[in-house]
Length: 560
Image (cartoon, rainbow, N blue to C red; front, side, top):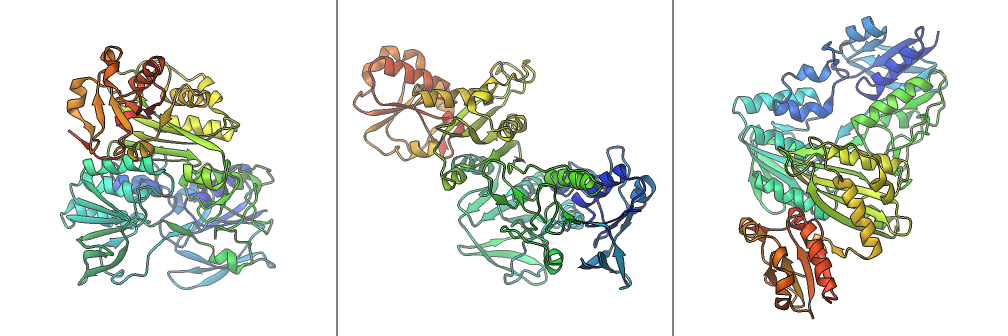
């Protein structure tokens, strides 16, 4: 009888154990988990805090409503799950794991034929003055989520400060605004989502968050915490901010101590090194989830990318391979999607910064459009940015933001990236179409088309960052071709060299535009801006650009 021991009882570990049981009904499978809770959906905790998820136990239930407890795994899957039991040491020559019962202190050795390490990661908790004060949480465990939700429900918390403007930080900002708390996010980098967004898209998110009363302070570093027994203020290198609730959202570090002490190879990222079959440097020991490093499919580089989706896929592959299979995990695209109030943000593949670091000859394009025909109820705007390799036309990455449906555009791009496709492939895909769901030409195909036009030289778009640098130039005219009614609603702020000529009047008012100057045309989404470019060039204007994405994608200040 094969003996399988799994260290870690959350995503990768229990997925591996469950898959192994389906493959081998006779195997002896034991899962060791140092905590008291198992198999919980940690990514759902911000939504439990926001009360979108009713009970914390809902994060630990099957789709049929069964609570995933040790008793459930024993009765349904015949898997022994030992909670509050810590794996202390791996003895590779003896093929045993020394475990310790954290309740009574008893130690014992578990023999294995195959061992799975799914020790996950731990939240970064900086050693700053006052870090041990009460009401400072990491939101890494359901018990943290329960404490935070209880505090906001009872009115205990009124002013929240979140450290870190990444996924968890911004999800928690949304959750706490749902309870009408004053929310401030402090990020030491110069933008929100610094790990996966470029500055132009990040600027759109930052501006939107401010509109939703989430104060985001970028380029600011927390230096300590003030209070008696519980936190009352957070000190930064620029100010003191009152707060009775602090969420630490500074990322995670892989838990590799056990693997390192066992002599297993640790990768360049600091996570456990594994091959495509998820084997460690010991062929009888596998590892998966947040404790291992992955390969980025586009760059080929090793990355640390802890995600619940990745952990579950890796667990399934491990469950096959420890039972004689030869499944391979291809890698990741660092694909993410996140919601901030009603704005959806997504990314897959390389950022512009990463493309530059890797030496790609690349260009970018940004477009804005509705996620379904504008005449349909519920149609929402979104912006899509593509990063494209110029000489091969290969798609390198995508970023998207807006109130429209983002996730399916990200997923389409992720599919193209996985298959090594081009912008032509992105345009050619036979996407579904019906007015309740989609436009005849989806925004992702529009983006691909804009990229092809840019390569052909027929679309001369510039990014919002490039355009902003020209706002004070006497040699550039910003041509707003929207209707007067639209211009009254919202305008570019601090733009002194701007002309307002509706597109329908442009042909009859060409003499008002100085042909010797550069013209940057735009509208709400810059479709009319592109039409203006075509008209002006047809009339002999030699230096015309289009503001990509229009005012919809403008990440800087606007005025009404």
